[in-house]
Image 1 (spheres, protein in one colour):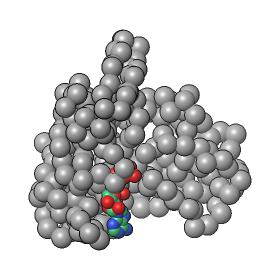
Image 2: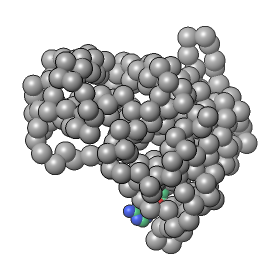
Image 3: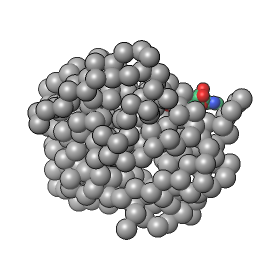
Image 4: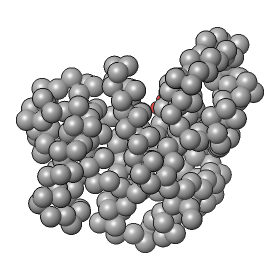
Amino acid sequence: MALLELCDIRVEGLSAPRLQSINLTLHSGQLVGVIGANGAGKSSLLKTIAGLLTPATGHVAIDQQPMQQMSARQKAEVMAYLPQREQPQWDVSVIELIKIGLLQHRLSRSEQQLRIDQVVTECDLVDLSARALSTLSGGEQQRALLARALVGQPKLLLCDEPTSALDINHQLHTMQLLQQRSGQGQLVLCCLHDLPLAARFCDQLVLLNEGKLIDVGAPAKVLSDANLAQVFGIKAQWFCEDSGVAWLPQPL
Ligand SMILES: Nc1ncnc2c1ncn2[C@@H]1O[C@H](COP(=O)(O)OP(=O)(O)OP(=O)(O)O)[C@@H](O)[C@H]1O
């Protein structure tokens, strides 16, 4: 059964629609990469699913339930959203930030502590947990914000460029973590600019261009020569091993 359904979504922009004619059905237990050039509509798609942008037409359903009919608590229980950029409003500590991710969840104190300890370890925050957010580097803040999104173990996890500020070790670790979460049954949807990373870790890719859905499917299918040329204006040589994927991109 589909966890997420988008039906004929259109989101208006200033001079052109940010999203148009988007139809998409995704199932639980998948890590899905959203790819496309700057301005393609990736963040707009995640914001629409998160309920932060209201479509002019169409609807979003999560677990068969139209999102417009869901209360704030229901939404918080079922999904978490990691924005592309977030300037934390309060200079809380890492632990206090992570606890915000549990506010709408009814859990015992011991279960809360278990979940917090788990994400602190998973996001490599053990030595940073008492630090105020303002004292962290950009990548450390990104890991703290990811921990806040992970801690509620939502059915639907929306991550907008979760690896953009991370060093290579933390990029790999974060993608493995997201893959692990999808393996446990969550649907993880994440915007990525790093196409080899997307090809290596994602079960499916969603390719957007100028607000339209161009292709959906396995990375090998979506990262075709024709799609790379049309959307990014590049050609690429790919090197695929069991241990990973690399590429040599060139402008057309
Ligand atoms: N607040 C806004 N109001 C109007 N238009 C917007 C707004 N934010 C973004 N847009 C426009 O919507 C389109 C899609 O933007 P979006 O941020 O979704 O792209 P993106 O694929 O996430 O890009 P990037 O890779 O640069 O993050 C772009 O044309 C952008 O200029």
